[in-house]
Image (cartoon, rainbow, N blue to C red):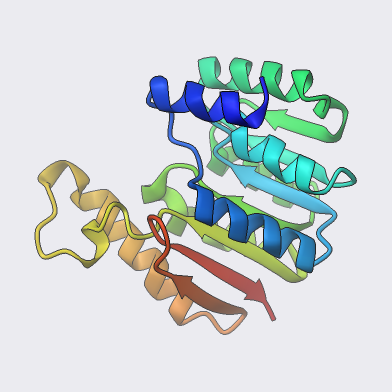
Length: 194
């Protein structure tokens, strides 16, 4: 399945994947910063994983997907695309994986944060430890369909929105990270470790 087919599959099956303008910026950053090792949280069907590997074939990719069905499909898609050898896939909870990666001393040039939105704030301390100097955290969907800046948030989304607001505030006030916020697609932030 090529990227265009994967995009169609994701749309038809209601699988959230990175949006076009956001992906363009992610790939641009990856090229500009000469990224060698990427950590992705939220593999879904492997769309962004494959796009980042196509963008730079020498990259080593670590990617985490908790959902077993999506994980299997992502692995198949990455294998069909020819990138399985340079990809480490984790089918477990992201927080657990991050803790394990910190313990094992892993370091990354780029983290693409696109997993459970309400968990970004919990991931942040671990992500900072996993970043190389000048490393980047690219956090997607920080506007949460506009709810982050809305006066009305449906009850079922309140906890997630409150946690995202905490994450955004944490980025704004973090002296170790230089963050720029983008109001493109569903919003994203790019934070570089100083």
